[in-house]
Amino acid sequence: MIEIKKQSLSETFSIYFDKRMLKILLLGAISGFPWVLIGSSLSLWLKEDGLSRSTVGWAGLIFAVYAFNYLWAPLVDRIQIPFLTKKIGHRRGWIVLMQSLILLSLFLWSIINPTENLALVITVGLLIAVASATQDITVDALRIEQIGENEGRAMAAGAAMAVVGWWSGYKLGGVLSLFSAEFLENAGFENYWQLTFLVLGILIILMNIGLLFVNETSHEDRQKKQLENDKLISSKFIKQNIFTYSLSWVAGTISGPISSFFKKNGFKIAIGILSFVFLFKVGEAFLGRMSIIFYKEIGFSKSDIAIYSKTLGWITTVIFTLLGGLFVIRSGVLKAMFLAGIIMASTNLLFSLLAWSDKSELLFAVAVIFDDIAAAFATVAFVAFISLLVDRAYTATQYALLASIGTAGRTTLASSSGALVDWLNGDWGTFFILTALMVIPSLIILWIMRNKLKLYEK
Image (cartoon, rainbow, N blue to C red):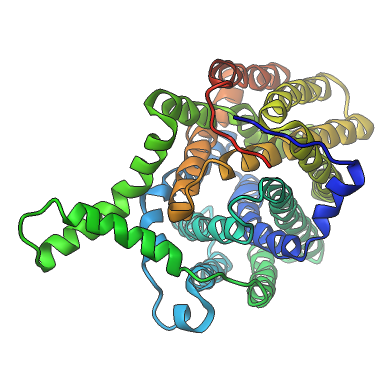
């Protein structure tokens, strides 16, 4: 059932001035920043050290960690971190611990040469991915818990602010990364990327300071519901002892979130949702994985990429994410999802024009702007869509399950992006056409189940 009550544009936009939105913005930035490290920064670092496109593409398999973080999400939902939980809260304690691991990883990267120790570089990248994927579990939960369970419009606005924050962390982190690397390279430092990673570590510290200003709600209600589920499972055992209690805890931790999701939606619709989430952003991921390599190969410098793809892209993303949030609030999530899919496919074709044209800064800027518009719109609709599906008793686990399944499509399939370009003998134009066609299966699935989804927007 979808219920939308129309508001004036000014009334709708005013929701962005809710003070909770600023906190959600920071949480989004914390979530997006690590993707700079294991995405564009790692890709360009390996490329400039002489590694092949295929190697760079396959290195992206470390993103697959995000596709499986739901496996340990139940533990993040329930296990408390010694000392940190009591001092700063359950959610924030997990985030600070993971941020510390990322900071340590950046230091390790700063002393490694990828041509001599590629396996070690990828291993450290994997550690960053694991820490980032783990913090995303609790970042998303903390973000959702900033909004009341029945505040559907605020949830959509929060989704927009989370996306703005994510892209701010990703884009501005990318700007700092690229400009620092180019500055240090021009200054004559051979290990300019290693030094850049130390500079990026400063952002980690600043984000952790900001995190202390994000309020964390009491987790007593969540614990109460989880314990009720544990007792229900425990009651099935004839004898009650420490073994059966432990078994009930494990069973409730693992099965509770999943059974709740399937019970709420029904088996067929639940499978349809999971299939749609898996496929929706595959084409975007194929393009994104190879985009920075494509820009470099057609003659753009790191500073060009920083200006057009990162700085200009960030401004565009912020504006159209907020506008996308307004569209979701006023028109509903489903309409937004269909429109987002069509826009994503259309904008990918601009890169085909760029590939088949001579080097053009104007066409480069146009392609990047429209791609960021599509990505912003698609992401805010997608985040709002899955945020409305979660059960508050298992916020972290169910959101992680849906988000990680979406990531599975983007990472496992898109890891072959470099190999696909090589198979096409470097025909970038055809490659981008194929990425545009990849959204079609997901939209067919969404159309089939559109009238059976349980989304309540108030």
